[in-house]
Image 1 (cartoon, helix red, strand yellow):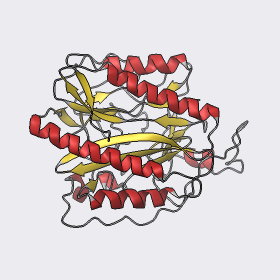
Image 2 (cartoon, rainbow, N blue to C red):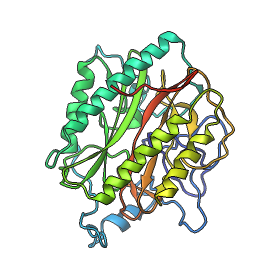
Image 3 (tube, one colour):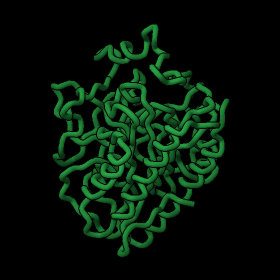
Image 4 (spheres, rainbow, N blue to C red):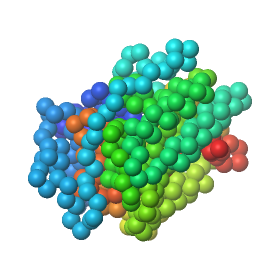
Length: 354
């Protein structure tokens, strides 16, 4: 679920929210630029690798690396990443696992017959159950790697494959994004601390279909500023789902989210998008969470994700040297929620709920 930033020599298109291995993932059709400058906002700075930019060292390896002016918490720092966890050979794997190359956005929407929708309900329900269990583990002292271990075990115990594992070389079965991490945090040895917020992003591949969902959880006693950000981000997702129905333009999602975020003066991250999901992990349409001019319209029995990411401060993302973890430029908090939905004749059904 990760898009990669680029130098000015590249011709960026809309990026999926999960890429890896230092490669851009481009959609198969021309789309508005996602990596761009906004009036009054500094250009997006994102790093492809240690050899291409010193931005991460500049921001995170200085003597004042842990200092966030006016904020008690310290900047997020990378911990130790444990080896990849094995998956039993009898569990079917998505095709991208063996290639270790991210396949990009598959052209065309994911539209299903009745059997396919039932399969999507099953994968979505399992993803929701895993996410609920993962959230119950969030407490001060637990490491994000321990959460990954629990998620991994529950998924394979249910005969499913953890979709992130091996996607473009991603080394873990779940994404855990703490505090200023916008998305795609790699579970590691860092223990959660009292007052943290953490987004847990779960995707499972069950019977040939992906179910994708995420939620931001509180760790211990969280301050009111963080609670409000999390609450408003959830409201943005709920409001966006409520406007979905056959024939509705996709751009209504972005307008709905940004209108609500603007009321509370929160930023909406633009570099990472929702996407079609089903038999493949990422397909058309690209779902932008901010005001846009996408002319596309929703289709009956179509499945896709909506996954807004809001920030208290800067919406500019910085990528760590691991080529996955994306954090806010200024260290301000970020929150995210995500559901997989199917478009029905009456509106939209949330597939990723227990």
